[in-house]
Length: 171
Image (cartoon, rainbow, N blue to C red; front, side, top):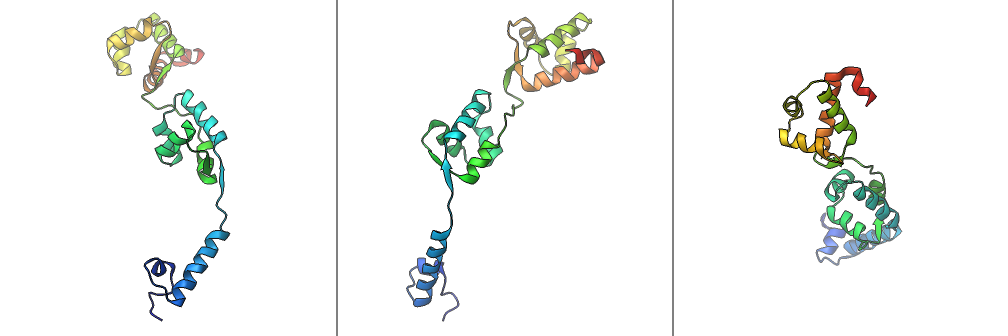
């Protein structure tokens, strides 16, 4: 017997000798016995919907779960009704994580900025400390519902902590 015979791959390449047929039959037998676990995608769809409502994007969901974006999109839109159990588990394990560039409502960060103004810090000093321009800071301070990027909100808390110390914890 040729050493390249007796495998499933040589059978697939066209060899029909007895050893290749036996290898192919054995491979099919193992495959049929293998339990391929697919689960309903409905709970995953509900979970992904809640994450997208919370502001997590499809790309970020796919990257965090290490699955294809197409899988996430198809599951969200309902065109994929069943998923491998391992894929479903990875998607269900995701928790809301805000991207640094995501815009969020941040009344508490705006309140900290107003407290800094009350302490005598100027808008230009605060804007430089936050890494944004004066007009952006003015817009945040005057908006009825202040919205800012997550990274700016985090910088605001760090700046207030540095300048106000323990007083910032009260906010």
